[in-house]
Image (cartoon, rainbow, N blue to C red):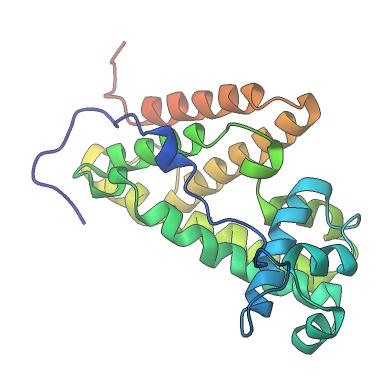
Length: 233
């Protein structure tokens, strides 16, 4: 969707909008997930716990407790922790999609403004505890890539889905502003993903999101420079 009056720059986005992320867990105040919601609650609990403490350190018992679901209900829906991990990777893509499709920047006319607005949006999310802004599939694949092909492939699909969602705006920006030499739309999308994932690792190492914000700020500057008119200062 577009508007008829393109702004010259990507807008600042309110912090409240940036942090509109579905809550993890799924239990009721009494601690038990509603009937019919156990599978979704287990996936949401996996998202919460793996982002906080890693895949290997997260147990089925912990996931059940966080979800308000019995262990019998867990094994009714999933044959193993690995099976839940694969489903949770697929669910991560579904969870993220509306988060990136609804903000105001998606309705800007200029595709470059939309791309820069998306980076602004990602920047504004880098606040609070690391488990609130880091990536579930990025966290999990670092641990499980060599031990589970199923998890690795599910994480790869989710990471690639994010890149592919950026491609239409990047291609449209190329069409409007000119394609930088030697750069493909999917290649630039993967670079955005790589910077984001790397910034999460740096933030974890420093226990401080400021270092991630610095990296994403450099990313925005790089993308803007790619589309700057030739010979511009």
